[in-house]
Image 1: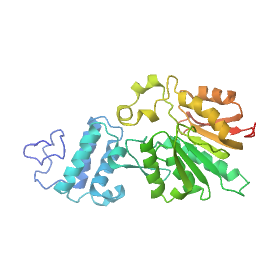
Image 2 (image 1 turned 90 degrees about the horizontal axis):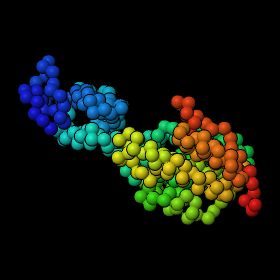
Image 3 (image 1 turned 90 degrees about the vertical axis):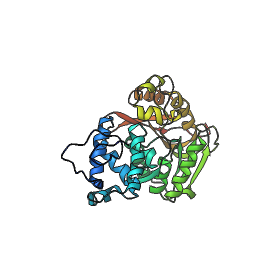
Image 4 (image 1 turned 180 degrees about the vertical axis):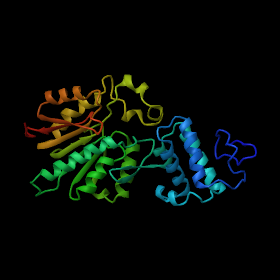
Length: 318
C-alpha cells in the first residue's frame, strides 16, 4: 500500500489518482475499487482485468458477483479493502483467479479448485456434451451405464456424468492422491459421491475392472518443448504432471489408447480431449489401435480439433 498524497490511500500500489478525484478518505466505494483494480490489472497484463476484479471483490465481500452491480455506491470498509488488496496483489503476481477464490464454474456447476488440479477450461465441456449425446442414443438401458474417467483431476467429468446421468456408475482414476481428494470433495458437494468410485492409479494400472460403456479422459497433452511457451499463469501455477505430455505431447495418450480399448465393452465409446497441435498424430494412433474404430474428431468453438472419439469393435475375451 502506498500513500497517494492528498488523495485516499490506494487499496494496493496504483498510478497517482487524477486531480478531479474525491479527496475524502472514506470515498472508497465498491464501484471505485473496481475501476482502480481494473486499470491496475490491465497494466499488469491480465487478460480479463474487469472480470478478475469483480470475481475477487465478490469473494472478499462474501457475495455473488452479480450482487456487486447493485452495490457500487456502497463504501468498502478497511477489513474488506485489506482482504481485497491481498487478493489483487497475488493476482498481479500471476496467481490464477480460480486458485485465489478456490472454485471455478464448469458445465454450470461450481467446483472446488486447488493448485493440485488443473483449472477447468470451457473446451473440456465438449467431452461432457458428446458423452451425454451418445448416452441418449444407447437404447439398451436394462442396466446402468458404466463410465471410466481416466485422470479425473478435480473430478469435473466424473461429477458431470453422475449429475446428468442419474443411474450411471463412474470410476474416477488419477495418479495424484491430492487430486483425488479434491475430486472426492466435489462429488460430495454435488451429492453424487455414492455413485463414483475413486481409485489411485496410473491410468488403468491400479484397476482391474472392464466392460465400460464410456472411457473419457482429458490427459496431459502439451509437448515438453511447448511447456516453456505456455502463459506464465499456467506454466508457473498449474500442476505440470497434468500438463506435460512428453516429447510429442502423446506419451500418456499412447499408453491410454490400448488400455481403453481393453476396458470398453463391444460398442463402448472412447472420448478424449487433445491439443490441436497433435490431433492428427492422435487420430493416427486411434486408426492403428486394435479394437477401436475412429469417428470424426469434434472441433471446439474456435474450429480447432479438440475431442477425438472411437468405438470398441472387439469382444473382451478376444
